[in-house]
Image 1 (tube, rainbow, N blue to C red):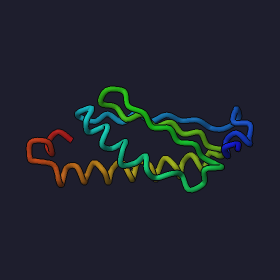
Image 2 (image 1 turned 120 degrees about the horizontal axis):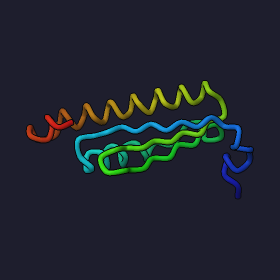
Image 3 (image 1 turned 180 degrees about the vertical axis):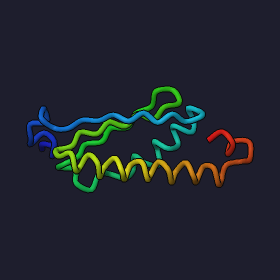
Amino acid sequence: MATPLDAKDCSTWHTLTVRIPLPTPRQAEIVKQVIEVDRELKAHLVSRTLSLEGNELVATFACLTIRQARVSLDHFLSDVGLVIETIETFSPASDARTV
């Protein structure tokens, strides 16, 4: 069965990559694990790939429209902000200062 992205010619899709540096590779891993369980609501319009490079969370989006790229990135950055705020709130005092 074809995935939604296979059904379309993705060569004309808009692609963007965002790199978010975090203080430690472990914190980057935590953010990735928390965010990657949430799938894109419009998978036929957006593909999101998350990866880690050391202490950086790398998110790559391929979107059918520029509007969808903006909306997806906005939601993603809001989610990242919430996870970082949660780490700061609930980490031991020594870890909270490094986020």
